Amino acid sequence: MNEEIMSGYEIIYTPLKDQSYRPLPKRQSKEVQPNSLHFSLLCLIISGSILTLFFVVYLNEIPWHLGHRTVDSLAKNIIGYYEPVHAVIIDAGSTGSRVLAFTFHKAYLDDHLVLDKELFEYTKPGISSFADNPKKAVESINSLLEKAKHEIPEQYWNKTPLVLRATAGLRLLPRKQADNLLNAIKEFFKQTPFLTKEDSVDIMDGTDEGIYSWFTLNFLLERFSGNAAKTVAALDLGGASTQVTFSPSTPATLSNKNDIHMANTPSGSMPVYTHSFLGLGLMAARKHILTLNAKENETELITECVNPVVDKKRFHFNGKDYYVSGLKEKYKTLKKPGNSFTVEEEIPVVNFDWCSNELVEYVKSKAKIIAELPSKQINTFSYYYDRAVEIGLIDETTGGQITVSDFERAAKSVCSEANDSQPFMCLDLSFIWILLEKGFGLRSDTKLFIYKKVNGHEISWALGLAYSLLTRNS
Image 1: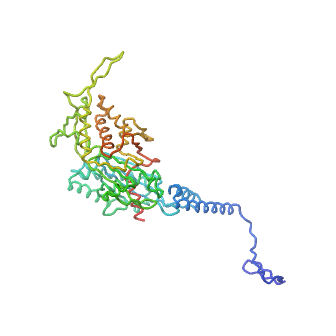
Image 2: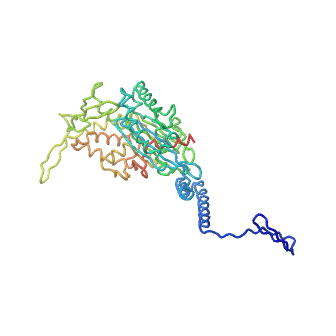
Image 3: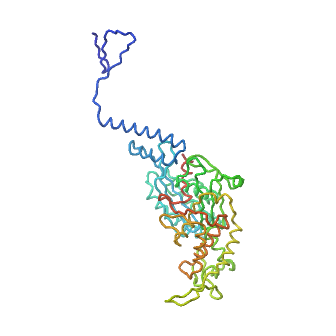
């Protein structure tokens, strides 16, 4: 027998009985370590899970988030894969400014962005209140930015886009004043350690505001499955404007060419209807009604749309203070029956009929009925949420579901009470009810889902903008 040792292998030559037989090198045996076997098993499980979820996600059988989160968790915990990305968005609204600092990570499967956490901070008043003092506006924004610095690790600052978008409050200012504010903030942004560009500071148009809010809502609700019918409508009530946005399906809606736009989502682009109604924000509508009979530049206002017990209550909007009182004579009253312990009395009330008629006229002059909207699942937020919480219609923490008629009943109830602790609640609730029913054509029994947050994340157009910026940059 001939024997030869080559490169750690032992090859033995023996006479062959079958000439088709070909021997294989025999590796020297090694002991299999338990850790190695365990690791191999884990790799097999992960590979199988990834492959299965890959097909499930791309067949659109489940929302894309679920598959990505499962795979990403395995990838992070087993092989240490985690690639965070950040964005800082400042929402300069009509009544205040908000900073949202987002942390996403890139999904292991396809680099889609998955939201991990966010910082949300708020300050009042809005920058439009500093129209004559841009330096104060910069100080207000800087205070928010300092909080974002504590949220995002320093090593990511120069890769993190920083963007400020002013909304309807600034659109209502004279252009020169608005430009002075924006230019001052642009100069300040150049000194920050974050990633900025020439267009990092600007006024956001209503179309973008509507689309980004709709994206945020459906992103957080995990409605992007590739099927547009599974998305929900977004109704955002701001201080100076309101937006209505949804994925349309009827020819009548799709024929509104100026209101149809393509929106990019994690599951592909889809057509979206959006319309922004400037002047139909809660504060803009309030100002219109309160100043109906006032002289130009008059700031002490008397109106039938607040209770007669209200006396010189301050209302601040768009950089101006108003002091509002109810009628002091010839006002409406309501008889309140007595009981065993009290006597019958007449209490002063708001002139509900007059106020609601004025609101209907104002709303109809600016809104338009959208025939397809009532067929959608409607989610409302911003001031819809605030007023519903304050009057006890929904829980502050969990939000809830009500109907349009609940706003109507609440308005009529509040307007029949002598209450100076919430002087504008009667007017605000009346406006919301009339806007939904007379302005947008919703039925009184239309269900409204009202939330401020979803899974701990704020419902705001800022998330939609952040996602757009980061995916565009990548």
